[in-house]
Image 1 (cartoon, rainbow, N blue to C red):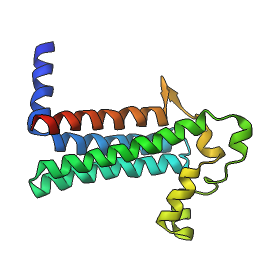
Image 2 (image 1 turned 90 degrees about the horizontal axis):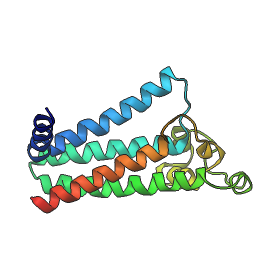
Image 3 (image 1 turned 90 degrees about the vertical axis):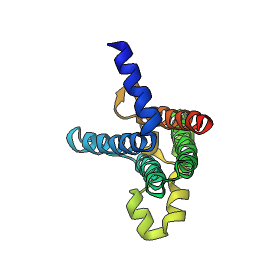
Image 4 (image 1 turned 135 degrees about the vertical axis):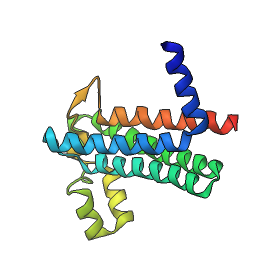
Length: 168
């Protein structure tokens, strides 16, 4: 049984890597949205930004598939994963700040889409990455919190893509 599963995963990794990355990134986004709706969780602007980065990973994989040039998709996946690692690292850092330091942050005052409407995409990203009290909330936890899980997934995408790029 273990050997069959191992062979199946190896086959997917070798033959359908970009497709598997796109599907898994979309599934992560869908799971986060479903958890928001059914567990009544409110995602902070940085969590929303993290979802967009997962979408960027899915888009990067799809570009690699459509262009029939896996190396382009893999490079884009690596860049997107690095961006995701930076965003989630910032959120984990904010979550571990002292209460005094958190109270001095003012970046996450309004929802991300509202910030985009008022300030434009670049300024909204800057304000979101500045962080705020809503981004410091630990929220729901299953062994790790959302930011930590995001960091793990981005790291897995990056490592798998590096190995895939190295082996091709």
